[in-house]
Image (tube, rainbow, N blue to C red; front, side, top):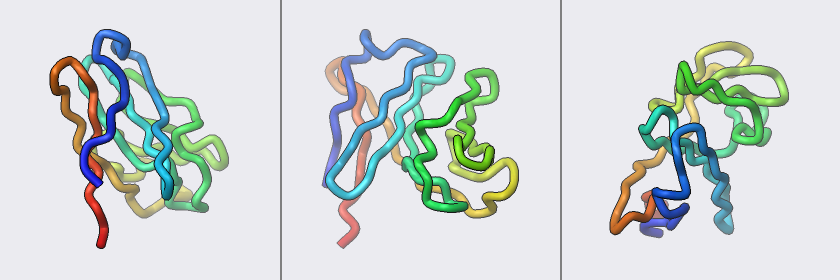
Length: 107
């Protein structure tokens, strides 16, 4: 699939989050204290919309709005139950001032 444009870096300051919707999935992109992260918008516990939940900038984690499982933004690993499987994460880069997420084609 390649790189997906998210937003110009100057419009994506620390504390920002955006959900990028692709035909087959959605990805949450976060600027946590100046570091950029992206993970799939799907809780591994019940396939709910993970990135629509609250997120903790101090700990760089997102909390599922359905059952409260927390996930590490860097690794996608669950930090609390009921989730126990990780979610996918994606590389984030900045090229020519544009925040981009690299999504591999899974063929």
